[in-house]
Image 1: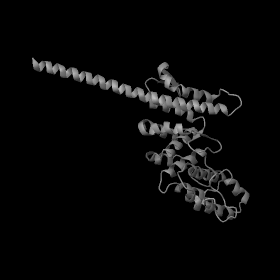
Image 2: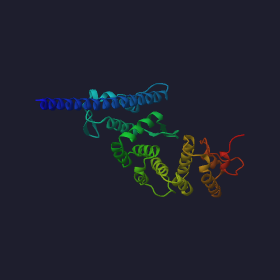
Image 3: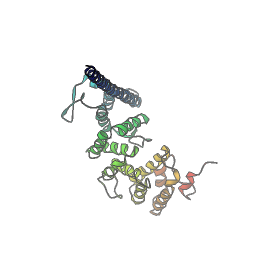
Image 4: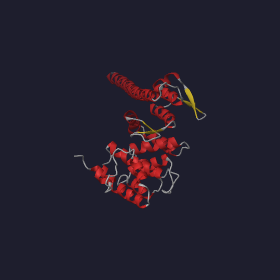
Amino acid sequence: MGGSATHRASRSFKRRFRVARSQSRQWSRARTRTVLGMLTASIAFLLLLVHGAKSSSFVVDSTSLGLLGFVSLPFLSLVVSSFKAGGVELSFRELSVHDQVLTFLDGIAIKKQWTFFRPRPGEEQFGAAFAELTGELVRNAQSELFPQLRSWLKSDNPNHRWFAAEIIGYHQLRELHRAVRTAPDSADPRETWETWELNCLWAASRLEEPKYQRLRHFLCETTSPVNQAWILNAFDQMIESGDAKQHEFAEVVQAFVARTRSSEVPNESIAALFGSLMHLRIASDERDVEQADEPQR
């Protein structure tokens, strides 16, 4: 009799424990969904304000609509049961919160060439909030993120390819080194590369030791002013972000300037390459660029 009561009590305890554990998991998932939802909505709303502030009158264009959709991400799963993407109907409610974020990042990615660093002409800055959002995916959703990045690298849309390289390079995802290194269609450094290809080159060089050696070699080999300007700007961005020091690029930049001058390129054209840079400079007495690294007295 006593044994039967003990057995029933044990079963009851196990049942209550399973219920409590299930409720705890549901609460944890709900909390994660809420935090990520608030973060994505805040980011999108900020981007929407920045986008609207660029003109004297706010225009509802495709970018605005995309950002408005991103703002509504945390609420869509509550009111939308399915949606169509690429002609395929998907069940929105069945997507995990990370898949929902990736779905809308996919839509944002095709709009512009987004960067986590100071933007060059033709680029738009993502900012620290998006760095945190993608960092969350890197930390907790690699099984969803990595296949998506590989898919973007093979996309027909150059902005998708750019975006994948930007995330891989910024977060230094060494697991995707080969994928981003082999992504460019171009191979000859004497040709002018597409910007997404140059971004893949930058991302791959950021994952190697010594860091940025691939970019240094490319600068020494390329004769395209477009390629040259892009790489010099990349060096400048890395210095500004604190990821590199000026002296790390001084030798290759000095060699580049000397080679360019020996090719009878006018000094005005060389100076124009450095005109938009904030940290790399050609010394006025033409000795070398290394003086730009000396502290001002």
